[in-house]
Length: 222
Ligand code: DX5
Ligand code: ZN
Image (tube, rainbow, N blue to C red; front, side):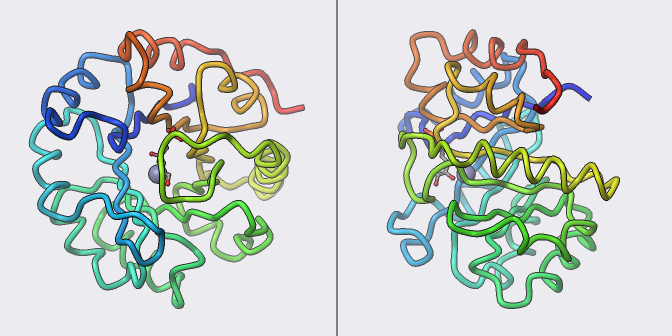
């Protein structure tokens, strides 16, 4: 399977969200990455359920909703009803992660689990067979435009190995600090989904950037 590209709408111009989603629609992007932040789990507030619902009206591609909120289990149905196709929750934010993953699956959405840079991939071992996406944070969550944490490359390689050895299907998504200049290295480490916010929207030609990210070829993990 070719890798997927998921522009992060957090870096769009919020005065022109519909226009920026149309731009994404006209590109080869696979998913629209939607960052929900509550000012509690992360030190930033982005937007909530009504905004996700409005974005859904414009997007022609699936919404990949990344919940950076405390007690995400209380909001799963609301985000599903708002149109989330992938719902990703943080391992660190969820006391009963397995139950939450099962609920996401039972609603017919893809279930994702995100881990922060300090969280070991070994913490994923038991949940891995049940999830569709592992979101490895390449930055500390909360803000777009941060620099990629290089140790995420090794972490990605180890996770790739873990998934392949167990013959599992979970996709590895890398989120934070992904740009055209490091995307190849990230793909070669075994990533399946590239999330890119500032690398796309703060670029002279966002459509071309998305298409360039999509046209990279994945070499085998080293
Ligand atoms: C960070 C968010 C990311 C962010 C990525 O907390 O989860 O999805 O939008 O933005 P860039 O690509 O600018 O690091
Ligand atoms: Zn995100």
